[in-house]
Length: 112
Image 1 (cartoon, rainbow, N blue to C red):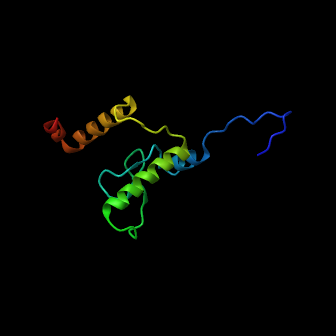
Image 2: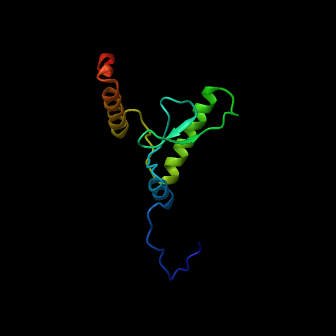
Image 3: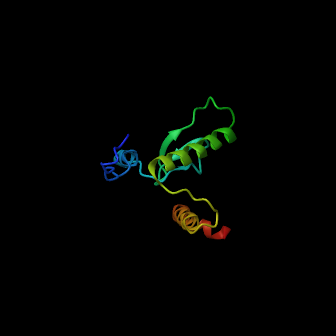
């Protein structure tokens, strides 16, 4: 969009793509599945997308899912976790561990 110097840019609207996915029941941020190779999950762990089985090998599908999740997060405006020691990453890992421990009935504590 070309804006003449005499006009101001419109106020930025919320990310429509992210809003639509949330309205469809698939809120972000998104990640590659921890349990199924080649799958992109939403924030709640529900499948959002599956990489075509035509891509040979589970590692290639998993890498494609990771790239897709990163691209989708960027498209939706979710910040990327750049560093594994990033506080947001540590909080997400801790929340995932707590969720697993709850589902497993406390078995995750044995590994810590």
